[in-house]
Image 1 (cartoon, helix red, strand yellow):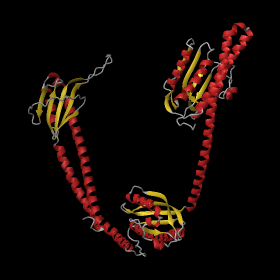
Image 2: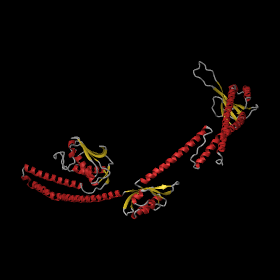
Image 3: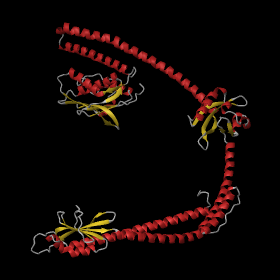
Image 4: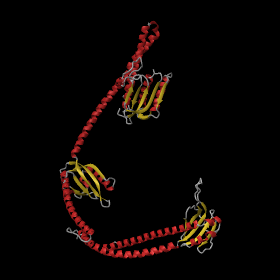
Length: 625
């Protein structure tokens, strides 16, 4: 209803409602403020009456004689609106209770409120109740050591009616209503004149807007009336000018866009909701040799090579069903001359104003040359795979030869060694008493040399086995494996006293047998090279070294010179003399190859006479063995 009125009527009604609302609010605020002032004044009057009566009631309460305060009570009841006066002893007993007519009335009771001055202690819809203490203030003496407080003889209760407040409140309301009506009438008369002056130029501006809406291009609004309305007309004229300029720029932009679309080398296309071609740029003719007009409103799937049409059709189904918002696929097109061209199609869904599917838009990029390159690369890849297969076969043959060599070492070399060792022991047992000391020493050296040769052969076989075979990776408890290895060492040499420090909950991923071999070798070396210490100590734990987390095995044994650290992990390399510490030089080489097969690292830190620490890492991902 209000929307169907003219702007002038709407403005007049809105301003009238606003003025009336403002006047009513002003009247309410004025009435509320006046009521607060009157209320505060009447409360102060009641407190003053109660305090005045309290100052004259001390003797009456002291001697229990109402006559001593009769005049003061009469004077208090003569105060405007005072309807009741009561005197109470401190224990709550009433000395007197008297109404405005001077008659005794039942006391209301002493409120349980502690007061030191006259105070409002109760309020009903038609009255206030004030309470004031009756006390004596003794004069201070210079001979008193302590100051005594005032003595309370009782309390005075004064009840004051709200009749004056109600009467004055209505007087204020009536006065404010009259003033509001007069102000409203005067304001509405002024607003009526102002609205008429304001809306006439607006009506003229509205007419110009309707002309512009009908499509007239030479529309100009008259600039007149109040300054704001004149500025609105000026802004409207500027807006019409800008719109004309933007329309011209839009036409030029469309021409430029058309020029780009017509000259780009990629095919640009659009389909409708049924999948038919609704737009094609001239690049289509360059790629296929077919006229654009011949292809319009044909199904997109039908323009592709028959063998690729199922793939294209599946993508159109996904786009239309909403499974995909965009896609990219490669397919073939058959040119007019019968040759085949590869294209890469990129499509996205087009939506209408209400979010509904209205088709797709996309491009077709000629990738024939790229496909040829990919085919050549595929041929090269296949040839490379053949070469790898040949090299793999050669490597397998080499591994077979290595296994044969290992078998030969294990059987052909060990048999003569066993014979030498056996015959040497027989000579020592049967003919030892016939040999002199030099002969027995030479015989002992032969036995020791054959034993050491057997250990070297065993080390070579272990080193060979470490480099072959498949890694069986599991999640391992290094703490438990180290504990078992140390327990075996202790059982083999129960007389030794070694302090063991083993960090709990050490875990890693690796081949159980190979990692046990790592710990056996490292802990065996620590046990061996700390054998000459008075208080041997071996530690196993995890720490940060070289910026990474690493496990370590540490001892306080013989140590070594770091200048020779590069020889540590070579086969048959020893940094100590055989007479000091026995060994073959194979153990650390075995450890190095195991850690390397797991994709980890191993290094050492040591000093002569200060022990050695071997660090190693076991990454989560197993490196190619």
